[in-house]
Length: 122
Length: 471
Image (cartoon, rainbow over all chains, first blue to last red):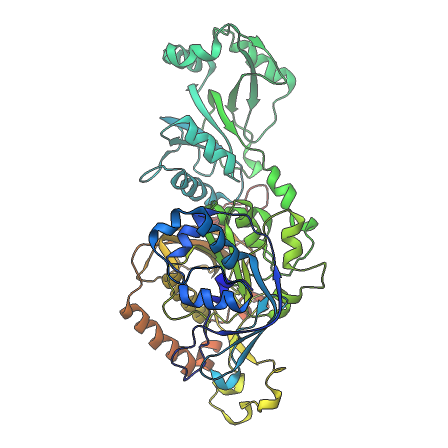
């Protein structure tokens, strides 16, 4: 599971007010190379919850992202490369995503998060 | 300028929409103008189209699955005399660069519905001697290729669209297409297949309808074996997929036979993410919207594969007790799922697309339609955020067909729309049983045929059959 995905997911269990961002429980992290595409990154940047990304990135062992951003940074290749690495190249292969309110774990196996709710969470 | 577009003779309702979507992708503004040539039936492969430039014609042909070629017509007529007159009237400055000394050329022949023998081709070649070709002939690799199309009566029992009268066209080739892509991606050589994997030709058509191109993000909420995303990835998009069946998405049939293997087989970048999710209760965070450029999918119609959604069957019937999961059993628990009827499935799909597509983004999906004798135009799902721009029918059997719907997001997703969705969602939950019984497509398709029904009845004369097959 990449951090781009993590940035989109939340725990939508019945009764939970704000299930985003999910905390990450790491068991296995892998780095996979992806082709660098600055246009794609610039497009996605507007949709990203930045703080959730930096926190998640640190949990996976990459702390190079700036804490705050400004639009000018999108022109800088150095920044885009860091964004690229954090967003697309870090993979959580095994672990879990944890609901911030209930502590319920959504397992991640072989890189695929299982976001299906149990019968009593629906 | 008007060009003659020659289509492949198949998937008739898909041809113009694919062309128009590609024209839009390459910058053609406003609607595409078409004209059926004199003496040609609209189902025939020949259509005049008005395009801004040869460049546009080439771009469309290179990417298209159903266009065979595009030609600049120098003359047409009902006989060779008329053809000669028309060509002599054609502006000299448009012809001379391609006839000049120092160029090489070749003339090809075509006739719809029959094959011209070498002798017949040679006879026609002689009739073109009035054209002042100054270049040399090169049959292998000429600078310019010309085409003579001679559509003449082939007899009425061929089953092809009727030819009213002979029509001859002569023109210069702008671009041709060879469909080699389909051979590379054909399902029979694919490593990981499922029962409802989309065949390569259709997957590419869907990707073209969705105007997929590099830099775009494409999502398939019913990803299965990834057959649709493969086509999107081939055209350079980033892809994402979800499915409620975790075995299909995470495990496949083993470490060498799963969704990732398919992408690896073709050297395509794998999806950015695959997840197990329920479209009825999606896992998106609440501020998220306008992320995808296209959503392309084939939802389960309940005929060959049924849809599933969260919630136990009994739960949806109002029983709560048996479904509380004790804490110590939670980690390995596999949640039960309930049947997901088509109406609710499409309702959820439209809402998700309305929210998650960028403005101008496209939703391309299949919708099943029962083929009934007295049916008027079928009604397709609609949504305030979308405009339906194309409906392409493909007959699957005597009983039903599927229609590829292309919808464009033209209005933003508002709080009101979200509220209306939530209310309808609750209504579906409360009336779960009622929805499962009504509109059950599976029984309509597979119930035994009523003995009195005559196979030759009216509903077949409406749809053309060519050479005994639906095209």
